[in-house]
Image 1: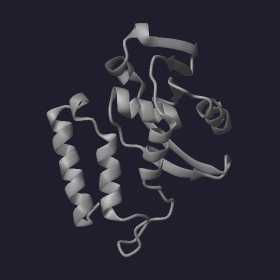
Image 2: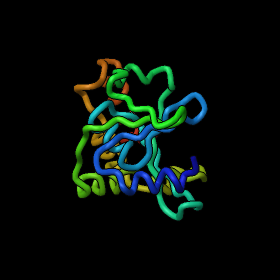
Image 3: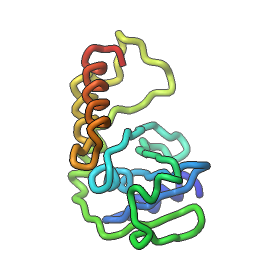
Length: 156
């Protein structure tokens, strides 16, 4: 499935998580990624400008063998061997847009410390907004704190 087809599906998404198999990973894009981080588990989100669709695209991914950690088989609907659907979620478009705008854009070029794409505080806030303590292990919480400290110190 092309990225354009995925974006077209996500543009109509009102409360479903669509997962797409890409190699050994399941990936969620746009609204599906938002719902996944809010309702299932916080993941690192990647936001990139994709020229082929002419806009910024957000995504998250996890190994395909971890799928059952996040969803019971009863919740999964197989569209085809490379696409799954999980229904029963809701969200407000305003909340999604605010979340989307808070995410830092990843540049293909390596950024230097004197030319940051966004300020540190916005990056820390975006990471905090995407993290859910109630769905995380103590080790993941500790790793988040370390990451936040590194971001604020300028070493990440």
